Image (tube, rainbow, N blue to C red; front, side, top):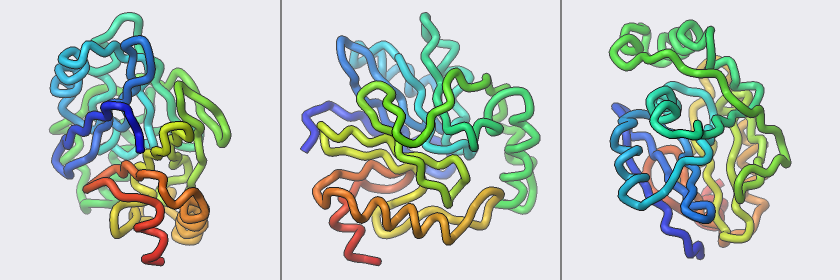
Length: 215
């Protein structure tokens, strides 16, 4: 059981979980800032935390929309990290990439213009086995090609994005999705310590044990 004061904010039109994770000495990582940047900024300030990392489990718009305003609100600028295979969701060509993804999900892409701010490029490509902050990166393709989880082994917690939910898992019918890969990634998660607490990209927290018995 983690002793950290992990803050959950549910943001945006599809109720994305944004997590604030204290690291040390008053610094924090924000995982998947999907919208409502000011709410995230206010929560950090209320807890007297400075933002060191913006960690992205994958590049879909509902997990990155607050990145531009959040990154601009802190000095020194927090480090934005994403897997290289999802890096096209950030930077100069991001609008085109997100338009294609949202059109595949919703049939039209006009929704994007209601929320769009130019997204900065990432500062660090993360790969399988990398460490960032207190986390080890697990590459879990399937929902997207660059989907990852952030695992703090010492605390017994893992942030799975849209790879694993309570009673479910992410869709694979959007660009870059692959059902076979996703099920391989789920099997990998289910082989981990049963007591690990799972902090997913949507809905409530769960545990590896609770989800593994369902498949």
